[in-house]
Length: 263
Image: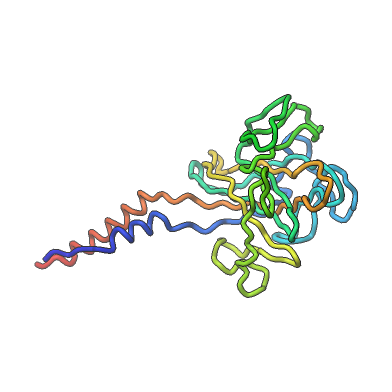
């Protein structure tokens, strides 16, 4: 008796394409550091002073967000966020998360933490995604990420910033938390008049210590607080290894086929 499996191609495709859930990692003092090596000392929110520093505000996931450009024109220092507890050598999709109301709030983030451009800064939107770094620790005015759609993001999207994905609609029962199963844990996606936005930063392999480091920045020197930054955290999702999953499924179906052969 010959047994055929007409659904096998569909099952193999499903095994290849099934996404993993995203693990959200909240930004916190233990995983944040300044890019320039100076001690990271954010201030408590509510100062109402443009001080060229990040402010910690009591909102969103983990009970805190990191805010810049909400009290006037400022340039908060670039940060490095370390995501730990990963499998060394495994490739992960990485996502950044920021909040916005109806205004065009911002986030800059990049998986490239080493490519620098000292001296003349390239023009905005020219495809250069590197870092301006003139090698002067403590001088935050010369350390920032380019205004390019691959590393600069906003609620609505502009000529020099990619549009974030609004996760607010994922809160199906209005409790403020994602109800879609997008994340491995409960993640707040709506609070007050604000919603959480997701941006894709690309894929990268975890280092030998099981870590991925992400560069984070604000949109500097804004004349309007409508371009403020409310940074909440990062997310990682292991990239499936389709060949292994597909082979395992094919082997299982082959085993069933052998068991059903007539004596």
